[in-house]
Amino acid sequence: MRALELMRLGGATGREVEGHDWEAILRTLGWLEYDRLFGQTTHVLGVAVLVGALVWGARRLRAGWIAHAPAGV
Image (cartoon, rainbow, N blue to C red; front, side, top):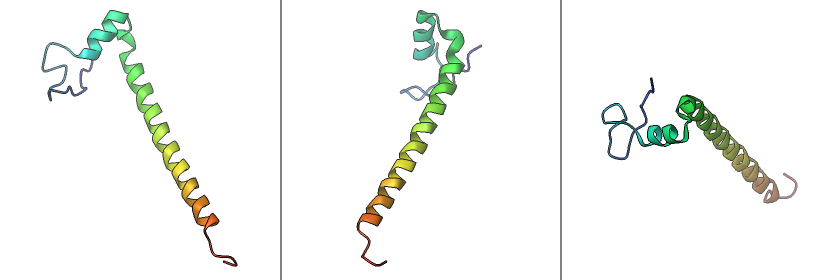
């Protein structure tokens, strides 16, 4: 059984209507059994991108501070 919890543009989930777009796409491709794996993988990749962006931004900010620090400080 699929979770069908992803919110659609119309404000309903797949449970409240006859299905979900992703359910139809994955079923057509024969990948419906991997739906939770796709969701978890996408979540992990999203978190990794977010953390990477924060680290990159912090490093750039620090490099800017060091480059513009007054001499002798």
